[in-house]
Amino acid sequence: MPSTFTDQSRQKLFFRKLHRALAPIMLGPLLLTLLTGSAFQFAELLGKQSQFRWLIQAHKGNFGPLHLEVIYPFLNSLGLLGLTITGFLMWRQVNRRPRRIS
Image (cartoon, rainbow, N blue to C red):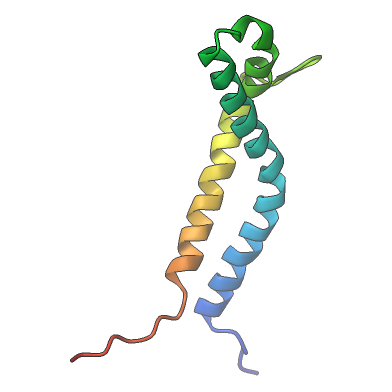
């Protein structure tokens, strides 16, 4: 019995599923990193960085009793890299219209 999926359509489906699985997992850490880094930078510009040290601690992965400073940046960057690669591969596989030669 012949397969209904080609190798290319299986590959598209795999990248889409991987991207869909990674995106919700990475949303929280990336938003936290973005917001805490930006807020601390703003506090630093105002000269209030000593009052907002907790922001940079959260930015680096120190969440009170949970200390992830060693691994948090690497997990964040690997997740973002995975999303970038799968997003790029899905974008590249989009069926494009052939160009008209005028």
